Every structure is written in C-alpha cells, then in structure tokens.
Length: 317
Ligand code: CDT
View (spheres, rainbow, N blue to C red):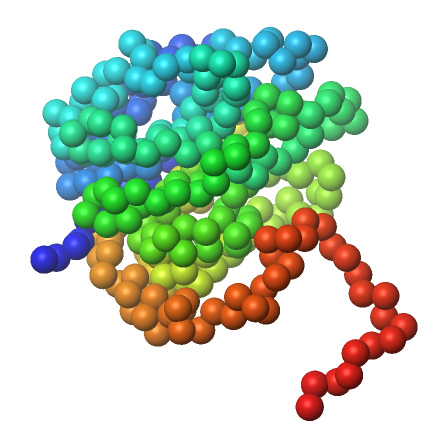
C-alpha cells in the first residue's frame, strides 16, 4: 500500500490585536480550502494561530491576557474550521492558547483527522523567554509568564496513514524534541512557530534567524528519518517583525517546499512516508547503533558541569 500523503503548511501573516476569532478563522478557512484544492490530506497551521502573539505584552496580573485563551476546543468560533475540514476531508494541526478547567495555561497544538475528530493534543515543553516585565527590551517575550511547561512530553499518534508528532516553536531548537519522537517511530513532525527577528539578549543572532530555523529542522528531520513541517506566523505584527520561511523538509534533511512571502501562504509537498525507512533502517538504525550507556548525562543532568580538569583521566588507547 502506498503511503504517500500530501501535506500543506499554511503560513499566516500577522494577526492584529483587534482581529476577532471569527475573522482569523475566515483566513484559516481560506487556506484550508486552498489545501483541499491542492489535494492535501493534512495542513499545518502555526503556533497561537487564533490570536496575535500576546506574550509580547506585559500585564500585571497573569489573568490579564485570559481573553486570548480558549477554554474548550472546538468552541463556537472555531467550529467552522472543524466542519469544513470534515466536509473537505482535510485534517489539520492548530496552535492556540489553552486555559484548562482547573486553571492551567498551556501553549497547545491539536491534531485533527480528516473526519474532524481531535486525535492528538500537545502542550509545549520548551517555554522560552522570561516571566517578569523587562523594560529594557523593545518588546517582551513573556511566554514563561503566561504558559506552564508541559509535564506531558512528546507523543506520536497513529494518524494520516503514518505516525505523526507535534512540537511547538522553541521545541524545534532542541534535538531532544525530535529524538523523543524519533524513538516512537515518528514519520511526520508538525511544528508551528512565532519567531521574532529581533533577539534582545544577543542581537548578533538576528541576521541568522532564517539560517537557524532551517538548520535545526533539517537536522531533526535527517537525524530521525522523518518529515518535518515548519509553519510560521510571519511578517510585521503589531510592530514586531517575525520570521516567515515556512518549510517542508524530507527525511533526507532537504527542503522540498518553502514559503516565499511573509503573509498567508500555502505550500505543499507530496510526502512518501516510506522514505523515512531509508534513514531509520540505515545510518539512524537506533536499535543497532545507539549507545545508551554513553548518554547518561542527557536525561540526568540539566545544566553544564565543567570537568575539574586538573587530573585528566587516562587517554583512550
Ligand atoms: N514562540 C517561540 O517559542 N519563539 C521562540 C523565540 C525565542 S526568543 C525569546 C523561538 O524559539 O523561535
């Protein structure tokens, strides 16, 4: 049986602060319909795809941004997207801010199958930025104020005739994210992102944003033999410029489709899921080649511990 699916990355341009959920959902619907016309089985939307990137603003009370959070999913504003997905037979992933009934706030992404049912939910693990107001910055990146770190980790779901995983923005910079899913056999990883072009702690990195974005996703794809879909909310949103350059990356690490604008734009690729095996059964045959006994620090030590160095151990023979 052929396991070729058509995947879309539905890049979004800026979402204004004043834009309502129904207005945003209309934009998502337009992209979903384009995806259907292009023969997509699955289309990925960005991180926090229903609202502006609100962690750029400080509120003295954490609850000050609660109107940007969804209390249920689907809800009446987003239901049309689910209905249209089912009608068209196109599944999707969607990032949004989630406020749970017991008061937890997560940066969440769901995976929705072609029949409109939610088959997976992922809550962001690597939360970047800071948690207090830092007036020296031209704009804030207060994700650590408004979102908890998920304790649920990275999962992979049987969906879309393969094994699909989710990650969110900053997760893509960490090799552990991909490997956790690689160890579950992942064949497609969908990653939404909001990446400001200006990085206040070290502006020397600004010019490298595009390079780093592709570098990490291409490496993650190759080293785990998986398709990776990176989908941006790009352009200048409320005065802050964010990276676009959404890309679909093959298990070889090659970019097979890339966005050329900074606005709403669909890119697509035919993804042969069996291509993953070329890497999973050769160079990255984990069962054969991984050395668990040599990786002790990875899951037991958080920060760097520099060796004392005065008494080096014996040189390897
Ligand atoms: N949304 C998100 O995770 N953005 C981060 C920006 C880090 S700068 C504080 C990213 O990794 O792109």
